[in-house]
Length: 130
Image (cartoon, rainbow, N blue to C red; front, side, top):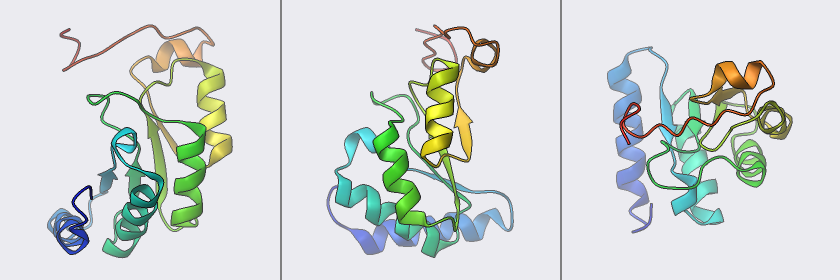
């Protein structure tokens, strides 16, 4: 996306969807590394490629889900595919904000604490190894 090799990015997305052969697919955008135009274009390409979800982040590159990014992705995919908010979601209120903004799934390492309305302070890095 950063080099604007949009055809190559789209072909990669499409190839993964095809290889998945009906299994659920998600395109991870790493929204913290993309500008607004790149986020919008990547989300639109994910829809066109037949992916099931776009996801905000892996959690390995800083940043994560923001309300603004979820709203942008929701406007871009127009309900055609799901949106997984991931990265930095630590509280019940964070999760609710993401859902209200358009997220259809939440990815959070501290899900149990969030569900209990406690602050999740887990900071996983490579499966818990810091």
